[in-house]
Image 1: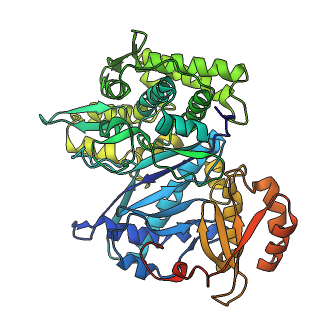
Image 2: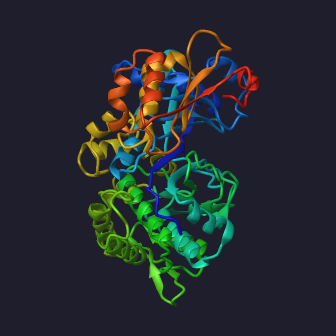
Image 3: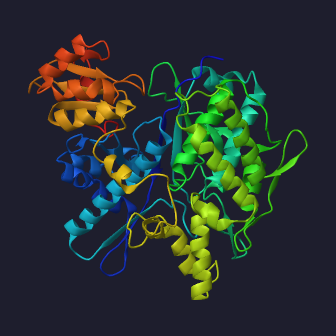
Length: 531
């Protein structure tokens, strides 16, 4: 296969978006979402910056909740926020650093919470809005929204997984690794059963994964361990779109590092540690955990005949990947900090095998939530199936610190997402230093009034007030384009679009082209596909 590519990480989450009016009646999610998205700029006001979005918010709102991607704001820190399926969706900027990935994940919730509070204040009529990363319905497990992780992979690996199938053992390894990482880094969920009881699943959304690979991302109970949507958003590489992971923010850094190493190993042709039935393994590992005893009873059969628990599999996988890191087969440029982070995953797998939930809860979302629920059972005399426990489950990572137990646990030092609050605050100022997210954010900060079009891989700006005059397009064709070392100084010296264009022409590190609205008139027209 082709040379292993640098493993840039990103993720998004459709937040649970609910509300109650002053009389306690429900507010439709679409109305909540519109109110919150209107206030995205509030999070950036302390830094003197604003996000960029297309003009005409009310017109785009009128197109309604049927749009699957609308009301998008591109933030001055490289992130973006929009509505998908009537929910507030948050999306991080790209980065290779797993700790920055973790800080980015939390920063999106800071932005969403600031916007939520401002939306309530603006309404001023006693209504309450609620946002949560727990995006599976607490009563109906058939209702689940999206939470996705994206990782850069080589075109050769992507073709091998979804097109050629020339090395099925590599597909088996990747799908088995995902079947283990989805529950091990899951958010936890009180899964309602048909008989009225509940069971605690390590993953909140594993029950929707019933295929090795699918194209659909929204079909209930027919989602894949791998997703074949081919939208690279980059030149010379592909974006592997993983749709089975929860938006667990406690374990983000560890998850990011493991994904980088697993996929780098696959690009090297690694094809061991394969489950006989990866989807069955996922369900056995996620549902085979008994919360009250801390015992994991679920095992999965490997193609070599062994039956492995989740802890045993993750430990063996991680030790194997660590050996590859130390041997130089997985390079630092591909998986930064893996030599430091992977041993911690081994420790957590051993703690899981030893039923040490308190040790697991330090860095794993499902364990921290599980202990919180058990504490309520003990202190309040509740059962796991009681409505109060269902709400506590759903609210564990509510963006409002007064409701989400996650924030109090972090403040008390009980849990550790491997980043500090200062790290998260820094993500509100600029995009990641190691990716094009930095330049994209800085262009929004400095030239927002001149931007006419923006996407992951380009920023288009008008040269004048003439709507129909040719425009300059800053190209960001790779996740590593115009990183902070390359772009910070030159962009600081650009006072207008003319200065920017002069730098683009003279710099060997920058790429640009020209667009002509008279040749692409359709891009200037109204319509809900241009949201």
